[in-house]
Length: 152
Length: 276
Image (tube, chains in turn purple, red):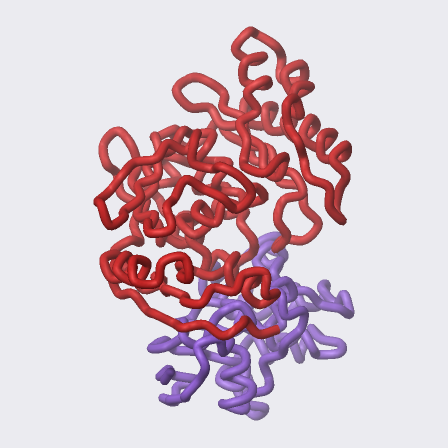
């Protein structure tokens, strides 16, 4: 089947099997490998991307379900020269260690700040509950998100 | 993990979905948000030959004041329940428990109808709907019928819905903004409750329901009748596991679940009384 969607602002058409997962489409066909597959069971959040601006776990969504939607991955958020505010805050506050959870963490944080622009620390911890950091680097991740929101 | 191959049919209306169910019969499975079904398909525990995607039937996504009750479209997402001002005012317990389902990413995709139709005893929302005596509206080839929550959940992942029927609406009595508590015991946000206990005041009686204490969501009837006969919360909660057959799994033994049920029901009753 053909899937037509917008990925990071660019219109794309791909011929996929119906069982293709969104994360496969992004990584294998769009060659956007910033989005990671962690647990592959919608537990860890490493595969988080935005669909129409809202965070979703792309390992538990079919590419077909994203047909006609606008998908944003970590590659579409900012560039090394001009990072998104959340990316800049993760760098500034050392919100990453091994980096495997980072793309998903950042995307989940962007969605969270869209819904709660001035979160409390509790809002951030609750809002990122679907993202696991295997390095357990949560303190700095929370600091980074609060800094990006301007509420610290 | 990739699901087994299937044929994908996208329905743009309830009628199209019903037509696809008639055409494909038992081979077909409905897909809403996919938060329960897709993990099962990835694990190959579910291998439907035809997947009928109703995720874009937008006219089944709403929360409406229908006078005596609230009418909720089956494809209303948990996120939309969580942010509904009408729900916060008229049925605070459903809004509050919707905010406890999974995590943000899950709530952006998962729907109330999907949760109900899946019939998982470990899901949060079915217990609320059971406690409030909600009514489920199913549409099939022969028309529409209303199914009371009390007889809807028949067994593990089994409901009274026919294979050719689509759940279209959930009708919930108004219970007001407060007077409820949901105690969900789990290890990680996105895990199902190891045990959940709900207490909610509606029509001047305290309703108590249990999550993951049997093959279906359950009403804790022994607790409810103890409360009606004047028992304290602590006395009534001692009956929380009466008549239940909780499952054994890696997370808990049946005995541990029975203990959790008694403790969580007591907490839920105490908090529900304190709540505004």
